[in-house]
Image (cartoon, rainbow, N blue to C red; front, side, top):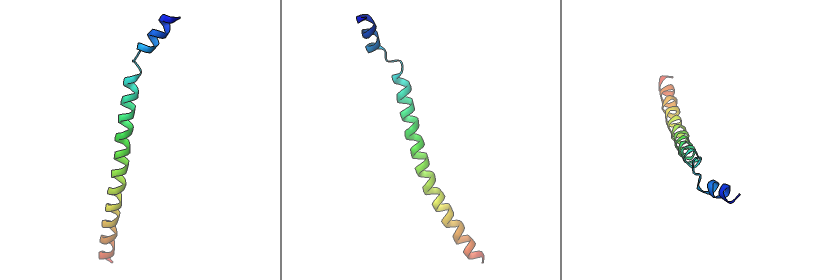
Length: 54
């Protein structure tokens, strides 16, 4: 039983997966935030163009 607990304590195979998942989540959050800002700017420009055409 002691050997099993020691092996579980030393096993770090799942740690890399969690780190990659956190990095991917951070990148996705940054992408969504920047896309919102870009979509607002694009919407404003299209509104200006539409107003100028009428």
